[in-house]
Image (tube, rainbow, N blue to C red; front, side, top):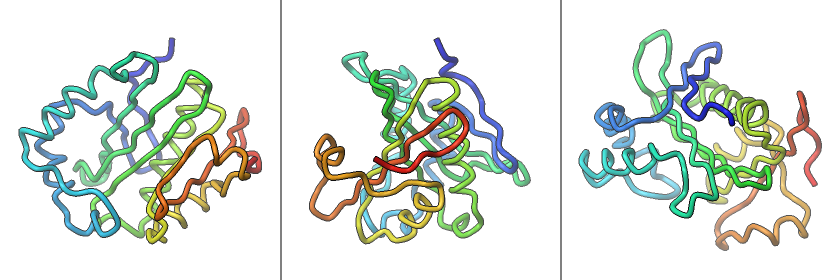
Length: 184
């Protein structure tokens, strides 16, 4: 079994397994209103965020079938937490990925670096062969980040397996041993 508590290193970031002890610093990061331009809402309170992080520390869905892998992003140069990456890993080798960074860290390539490190970990340690991401169609910044990492629209047959809302898009990336393959 892969180490679900492993810390991941990238050139400028340390991806630490998310824990309840990160809630206070992450509450500040996730309270940035710019993050919610396209979807979701900031955490209601520090206590609610801490409770959510405690639940996610199980690293498993309620039915135990899926892995919930969550890492906070620590910028090495400043030592501060700047966001998170996460993946829901299904037994069939597919994983949904998501990410958030505070807006002061946008445009520096840190999101791409974090998601690339996440995908490498999913492939190497969890046998993931397909990474999927769902995002609001209006979020062009996320589309550019994902496309730069080799994500693309799936063929219609594959897209049917993962329904999305009318205002959302689904992108996927097939993952080979050490390289991205073209999307199906």
